[in-house]
Amino acid sequence: MDDSKFHARLPSIHLYTLTYFSNSFILSSQSQNKKYCQKMLKNERSKFSIPAGITYLNCGYMSPLLKNVEKAGIEGMKRKRNPAFISPSDFYRETELLRREFAKLIRASDPKQIVVIPSVSYGIANVVNNLRVNSTHNMIVASEQFPSNYYPWHRLSQEKGIRLQAIAAPQSREQRGKRWNERILSAIDKKHQTGVAGKCALG
Image 1 (cartoon, one colour):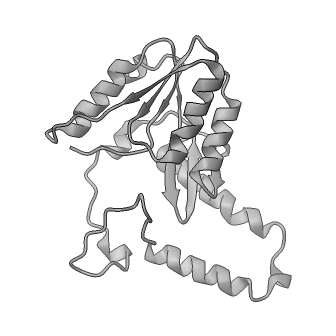
Image 2 (tube, rainbow, N blue to C red):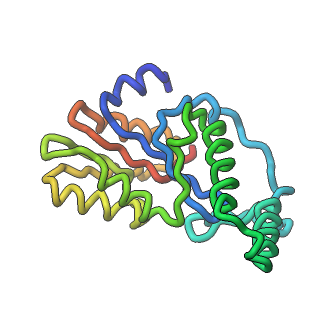
């Protein structure tokens, strides 16, 4: 897809990214350069404890922990054995490091645009409550979203009289992701204020 055509179709749309990372959802509002995600992923099985012969894809239900995340979690529990040695700054030091590293990953210019939250519903509620929209705007979502990434937008559309359009996936599996993306882009016009894509379609 031509980047220039993609951005030309998004006149004033707020783009948000929800990423599940180490038991937290990270919400970013930075327009991103798509080149970093065009490379083929390599096999990272060795970084997980998933047994050989099992391919786990159901991350919508629960994502597996990386081995280094598991190690960090155990270290965190050990630190809580002696809370007298945990200072207020400890609550922010590692979080700020995480924000900086994630900003580098998605090529965001400012780590302050990254927030770490305990669930999708909290993050989406904050986004919805801070959007300046009215009845002249439209919104689109990919169909069959996880409820936490649909109902807040539905409520906003009801409150503001905004047209909310759910873009359904093609029935055919052939080039399904490509054609679904094309459907989403085709639905965008100058009245669209938000576009929500909380899933990844392949193929």
